[in-house]
Image (tube, rainbow, N blue to C red; front, side, top):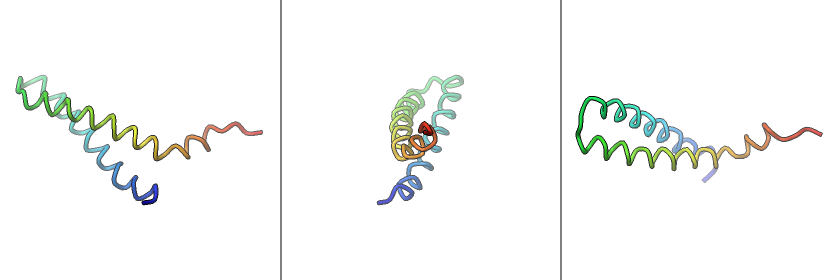
Length: 70
């Protein structure tokens, strides 16, 4: 699969993981439910893995954007 195709999968999942973190983070302030804490922990792991995949898939952009010009 091409990089663009992978990014079409990873980017929406990354946004979803970020939203889950924000919602469960706010939910932990008001509720002391174990399920919210568990979902926040698992969402954090997913967020880190998806962010790493996103950065890996976009590594070519980093190299071209920050390459020293001769």
